[in-house]
Image 1 (spheres, helix red, strand yellow):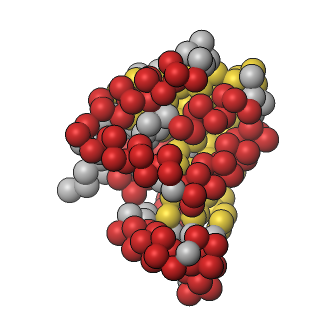
Image 2 (cartoon, helix red, strand yellow):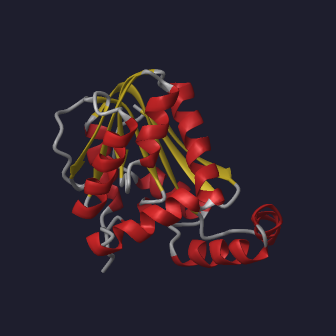
Length: 215
């Protein structure tokens, strides 16, 4: 059985790592850039938002965006709300405790849905993807990012070169333990996904795979 929510008592430790890790900051910055390139205005949902760093980064980059973050961990949501108050972005960024399998939003609410390094925690990914597509507007986009299981040796070496041997080793260890699928597995999953979409694609981004859906 998968543990879908990080326990509230561990939320502060996770937030510290997510804030201080250069590698995770780089991933977050790239995701924010890709999201804002697709949706410069409208409403975005971040699934598995953690301490809320991604919604805040997105909101800073695009002043016409409203971002809602959800997480199963009350401790994470409390931290995300605290971070938002400090940032002065409470008018455009909000958070609530919710599960991807039962989103508390009406059909066609969001222009874009994003999730970063959370998918490997989902117990019912097929049902969660369907629910995400339910709340997505027509012509909307979904970007789901997670570690891949099939990290090549060349990618491992590049991570170690860029972030140092120790941090690179720790990252590779974490990626092995907290990854979702190989690229081929992800493509097979999307092919079997029973949702009407105009686009289903998997893109390699180093140690990350990005799943892109278009409604």
